[in-house]
Length: 436
Image 1: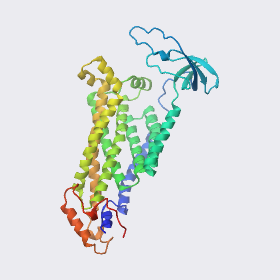
Image 2: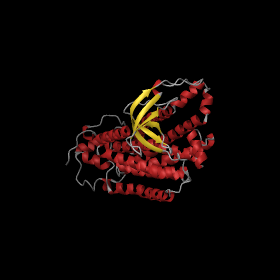
Image 3: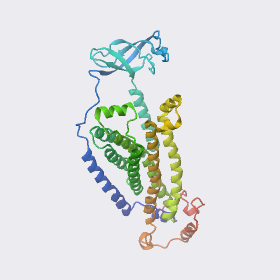
Image 4: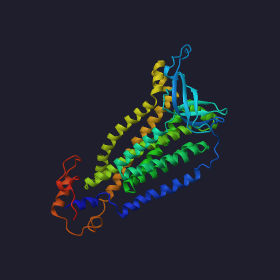
């Protein structure tokens, strides 16, 4: 009997909700679209990486392998793997010699891959027509992995899974057509990253979670936290004297294209933070909405405290996830430092490690800020419906006198201050509802 009252006081799909969502979406969408058009790459980049002159990349299949004796290793180097010494017969899959068998030397040396019969490989064909084996052809396994991933997402999420995949596609399109080309053309990397992240955020969140007040609150929380992360990153990199050049790839980009490597590092921090921020903000916005729906008597303070407890538990696990992700990505480098037996203080202050420390700390601070910001916005939005006068919020929708048991249940709910205390049967969120 009291179910209609509970659903009426939760965050409903009303005209007020739609207008509040539009008030968030429209200005952000206009600003983001304008910035996208202003910064969109025109195709006239600063330059390109030096191309391998006349080298073609073709496919082939190994049809035979003959192992031979490995040459003696140079002094101080490990002995080569016997499975990488010898000759291979490869059937060329495309190009001018398609279908032809060519005999090639197996790649050797430290880290050389093993090739066996029926392996699909990548061949390099030089201007003189000579071939060499470059790598395994991983196109088919990757397509199968992608198909399995898409099927699993759709099977579990159904229509929501389909929209999530569409959002993932939008993310890749914006990264490959706007963010990367824009940086290569000399646009300010930090500005390009912020605009690209805002466009990805608006498209993905609304596509995945639908146009609702909770999604709009998550968008606002994500945008505020992302801006804070960018400011903290800018200050931290300047204070730590990090210029973004920590490996050969960054040095090559700086020398060949004269890119702003520090701005590139800032852009990578912002893009990386977005992937975790939207998870936290959406969780907090939906949590507040569900708390308001399950406990209609809760006001701003109680909603904020209850959702804040959930947010703190979420952040505690996410922080550990971030640190482990960075440690896993840098594991070979950490092993190299361990072999060198450098003092811990020296290892921590090297540019490559210091960069990862700054990246993880700044990203974590942005995540921590996302919880109170998003929770406060969501709690304020949810509690406003209960702050309206009775004549405008409920009596206009329910002119009849409410049943006695519903009034009693709300009195008990007001006395109950504990979120995890048992609720009466008529206000239990998990109790099946009957339509009137």
